[in-house]
Image (tube, rainbow, N blue to C red):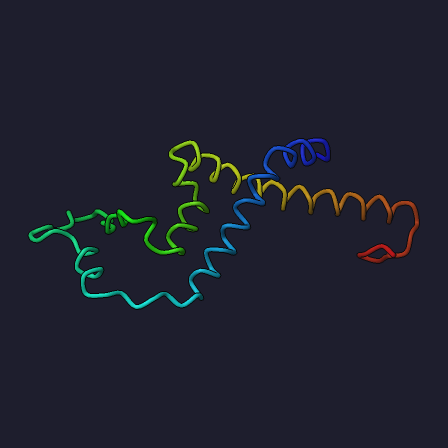
Length: 129
C-alpha cells in the first residue's frame, strides 16, 4: 500500500495542489467586493429577448466578451478543470478520487504502523514523540 501511496502522489500531487490553490482563490474572490455594474453592463448580461431556458436544463449567462466575467467564476472554472476542456475535467475528477485514495491509504498505513508498534511492546499511545 505504501508503494501505491507514494507513486500515485508523485503524479496527482501537482494537480491536487493546483485544485487546492484555485479553490482557496475562488473563495477569496467571492469575499472580495465586486464593483457596482452599470445599467449597460446589466443589460448586456441578460439573455436575448424571447429566450426561454428549456425545462431540465441549467442555463448560464454567456461569458463577457471583455474577459471572464467575475473572478469567482474564473477561479471556479480553473478549479473544476472546465477551462481546460474535457481533459481538465477528467483530471479534476481523477484528482478527487486520488484524494479519497490518499485519505484511506494514509489511515491504513498509520494504523499498520501503530499496530506494529503495539506488537513490539511500545506504550499504548496514538502518536509518537
